[in-house]
Length: 319
Ligand SMILES: Cc1cc2nc3c(=O)[nH]c(=O)nc-3n(C[C@H](O)[C@H](O)[C@H](O)COP(=O)(O)O)c2cc1C
Image (cartoon, rainbow, N blue to C red; front, side, top):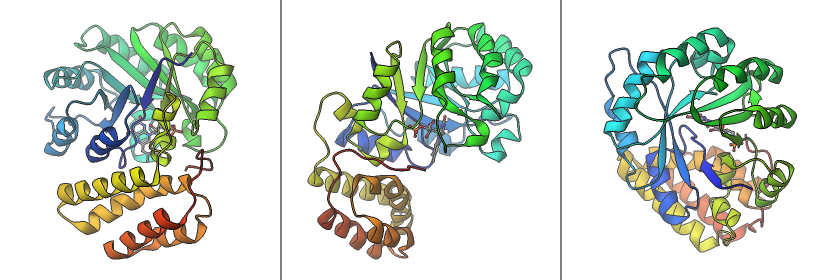
């Protein structure tokens, strides 16, 4: 049975403004993960990272760190403890070339021995519980057989597994067979992540994996902001609720960036996923992808909310 629902970190989308407004308007996740920050060589927290970490107080949140150096993680944990957080999450999943070329994110999974040394050096010195968000490997999900014994040697409060490998990024089928093995064999608690978009899909997952206690959902929750609420037996989003949510989000982005153009651009990124909540969206979606001014954006959003039928359950390719 699923006992915990986590909102995945989506860099560029679920940043502080989004998390704050979403939590106020919808909520329903047990915890929201803050997109990663990378410690600097000088161990100084940048103003931007500080604003992001402190920008949405009062919400149950887990900050995430991306590094391949044990001393960075030890430093980050102390900093995060001082900021009031109670857990630090390590990013071993990011597939972006610029990150993996530096041996970070999913790139670290290519170096199992270095990963082992990293945990060995960090774990005894961490002042916060450590959780990890990983993939099944770099090229092939079979690599996880080599990685799991490493994770097993350390006290990881939760091992969240995005059931793809680095080269697959966020597309194609998830590897549920390999996830099943990881769930059965891991000594640490496991959380599943990948392509859960609807109540039906999440219930089907829970029925197939009765031992699973936690799931993390990202794009599906941006596509349907009421998804976590529905998973707890609550109501789908109404048109009015969506309108109020989007208006507040747009206003908050304008306040945050001080520029309506940047705010409209941010809204376009949210709509990239949210459009899946509507049927017959092709024509307006094309316009949404191409608008040039905030005024155009506002008119298209208004048309979507007035004209398009709401889906009961959001489906479709999310990438
Ligand atoms: C735009 C975008 C940004 C992401 N940013 C992060 C991040 O900062 N940290 C992280 O661990 N994963 C990040 N991810 C991966 C998601 O947390 C999640 O693992 C992935 O979207 C699969 O889950 P989903 O199918 O429920 O969306 C990102 C994914 C996307 C699409």
